[in-house]
Length: 475
Image: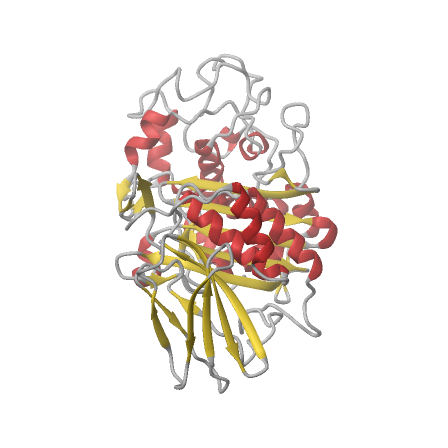
């Protein structure tokens, strides 16, 4: 597939200004533009307000070769966003007083872990709080962690891998690369392997595999369908294919795994993840079930070691988008970019999942929160296990969708309901009419866009007493 053409800053602002007066149409345009600039095939996005989805959209392709669109059922690789689930699992056991986050983790582990630079200092212990706040002195050894990626699910047990990483006689042990040369609790450095170790502490205490614990205590109570730490638990037909991009070519990446899976291997849909975010926004409560205590959620979202990193809670950290300081996390791995944030003052939240490793548009996140400020759940709206997000207004009869978007050769106008499109116009970014076609028949309409230059366009659909404008990319 050819690469997207990058549009100048002048045209960017023109596009956003001309897209439509409605802010959600501007958001559509901005997301598509950032997809174009970052060569991202597909994106799934959700906005929540008061723990209820009030806006959700899917863009582009889950699988390029099959021309499969991103849908509500598309399953994305979460990367580090997975760690928010890990944190909730650990803290659920903490609130039941079955483990402490402030004692030496060796109290719980079947093998001994000590910083190799300070292993003879009895006071320099590693705690769960340090692991979850990234000040543990445990270090990601890239040469090891990059070498254990496997096609499909990895078969090495989590405990076996971690023992080989942290015990001096282990296959992956390196006294200088697996730890930082400072005592635990003194310096902030993100450590994925540290969060894996926290997950294994939980597994060692409960004597339940970490993935099973999450299924029983988080995924099932939250009705997080199509969610699994491993490919074996998912329908491969719904998986978004990860992609890399180089020059003018997309390269599909085979679905992969690694033995230290808790830090980033969770796969789920944006809507299922929205149920987890709704629980956090609602102080641990979802669908008449209390998943976490409100005090536990508060502890997670409280800065832990303020002199080391003032915005770091337990896994969740603070980031600023526009005028908002939000709590959340970003994830990035081969063919995956993910974002999940919440803004407490107006109880809003956003989710952005993409199947490329370059999609981190801070302005899109800011725009999603700006739109959230203007949205409210409908009267008696709820978000539960029995149905999808009922707060989202029923799609009006006049609303149409177009697919695929981005489009390459053809684009199809979907004709739903009893109010067919009567006329279709396509405009370029500078307002030039590129197509004007009157329709006399109902049913889906396929339109050739092969003659259009690569870039962003606007399709205006005219039907009885209504006009709808949809931005799309030609690539």
